[in-house]
Image 1 (tube, rainbow, N blue to C red):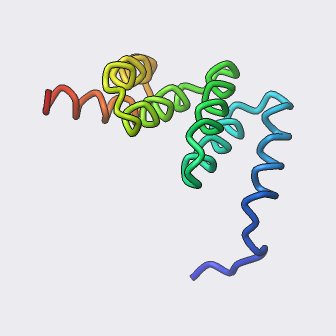
Image 2: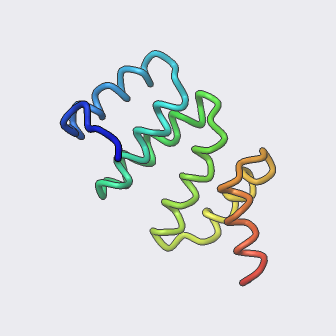
Length: 103
C-alpha cells in the first residue's frame, strides 16, 4: 500500500499543471485536460487538450476525441481518433479499432 505524502487538492494541482503548461510542458497540459474532464468541466478540458496538441502532445488528440465522443459528436471523435492512431497513440489506436470493429 502506498503512503500518502500530501493531501489531495484539485485546485492546487490545476494551478501547478497550468503553470507547467504556460512553461510549454505538453504532458502537463494533457494532465490538466484530464483533470478537468474527470471533474466534469468539458470546456476547460477541451481548451487544455488543445493547448497540449499545440505543444506537441499526440495523446491529447485522442483525449480530445473522447470528449467529442462523450458529447455525441461521433464524426469529430472518429477524425481525432484517426489522427491519434496515425501518429502512434495507443488510445487513438484502441478507439479506432473499436470503431472499425463495431462500425
